Length: 632
Ligand SMILES: *[C@@H]1O[C@H](CO)[C@@H](O)[C@H](O)[C@H]1NC(C)=O
Ligand SMILES: *[C@@H]1O[C@H](CO)[C@@H](O)[C@H](O)[C@H]1NC(C)=O
Ligand SMILES: *[C@@H]1O[C@H](CO)[C@@H](O)[C@H](O)[C@H]1NC(C)=O
Image (cartoon, rainbow, N blue to C red; front, side, top):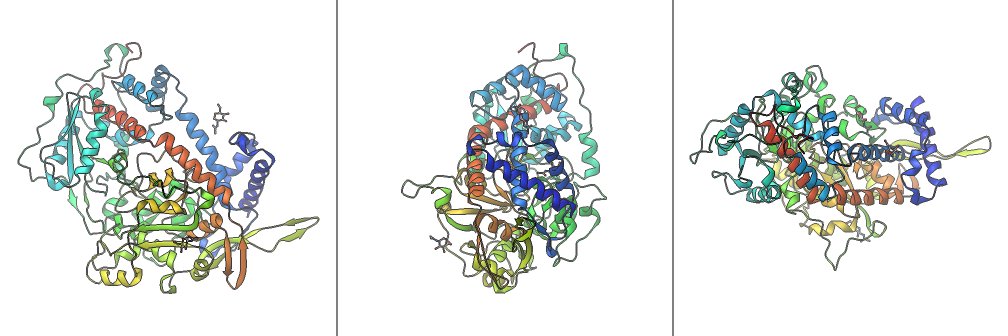
């Protein structure tokens, strides 16, 4: 209860300060908030509110107001710490401070490239550091050999790209499927290949991620201290003769492989959770009561019924129930993986995997593009249809007759939105109670109630459907899904999305390729997923998009906040206004921010910096080379 009081007080202040200032002062409003409020905000994130299944709690202000407010501060902090370097000398100093080593050779070229393209992000490339850090525990020759082992055998579903003499090319033995991916990669790398050393790279052709080194091993690899170079040995260039150090890719493929195959099988216990400490629930508990909500799994990232912490939501270590909640863990279509640290570049990954993230060619070459046609322009937020919209295939994993589809995120959300057979559990909703009078003041308050989906579906509009046919199924799981999700709808043009206010975004077999175009639009994306991409640090939940728990329990309550409610709820007529301005602000901030930090130029800048790091990491002289400020 203490928590609720603080929450109410803090939210009260928030509302007050917003209303007393003109709208265009924007973020300045927030900097005048007294410091005690920050203490309260912290307190709210550590104190947990009771189980969502039994909300009886009343709150004076809506948790989403709090979350939006908090996101603004986080985002401001993010910008402050990533754009502070104003010249290459400062960028080098910041780099050394952050990452405890010198920048790689060619950093000056990278800096010039990034600033020429007005990159907002200059200093914060923590995600690159997280991904490559463990590889410093391997000698350069080992990293090169492991790259070869991945691309020499086509069964591994890894494609090689070679850089030689400043040119990028596709390895000879690559199978022609996924040609678009490799062509896109070559196009992207060619923009800056002249600055890269000779090297080979292994790219994951599958959507699913590949390398999960157990926590015990990878933590000690991360802890390896990097040798400090003395300034006089330092060279701002890669070693000579690198081309010969990479074993040629054989024309005749090898048949050896370091990978184990677990396609169409459960992967959570062997791979999904091994990146967690042994004592964590993901490794020590098995969550058998699949019908019940695992409250210890949801509470750390929840604020009431809402998703409060996007990074914790992606952390599987406290979420043992995810074993039964996602295609990647239940039955991935393709899963060839290793517990050893093999270097593979992937478009996305889930927690605990050691794949190296890079900007997907899918977005770079516009496989899904935000391009509203002239005759059907993207309407303003206020003019859009107030519906939560999703179209997609059952492609998250393979349901081959064991009923795995019932756990998959996509299927669960379609079920949740459509109240199929009236079989879904009642969902939490936070709605105003009758006002109460205290002295001279009348207080309004909000209370949670559990509401049958039928009531929610009458009061709120969703259009969430599986398209055309049931994909990736076998045995009885095909007809059962057809009955459950039928009638399946015709495919829609991608550009039709923009007529809807709320666009649901769900993981597939890997990341969702639609999220970036969703952000670029005037619509408001609602994202539920555990796959993370290269941009995860730069985009802030509640500032740029609306996050949902993959379990789905906050979906209706979140939609109700933005859309308003007008209908019969538990036998009583409820009419609650929509939070139109809040929704429009997030939609527009996401759009503006995407056009600043998720442009194609930003993908190149990220990739360029990553490949310079990779060049240094695979260089026999990696402890002696680096960008020398004095020489620069
Ligand atoms: C960001 O920097 C500005 C200007 O230096 C400062 O006023 C503000 O408090 C900072 N915001 C955060 C959240 O750190
Ligand atoms: C999420 O939780 C982590 C770990 O407890 C914390 O460091 C971070 O600040 C939290 N983020 C948000 C948005 O509350
Ligand atoms: C809004 O979208 C829903 C779902 O697609 C549709 O049924 C409804 O007719 C649309 N409303 C308007 C005004 O176009």
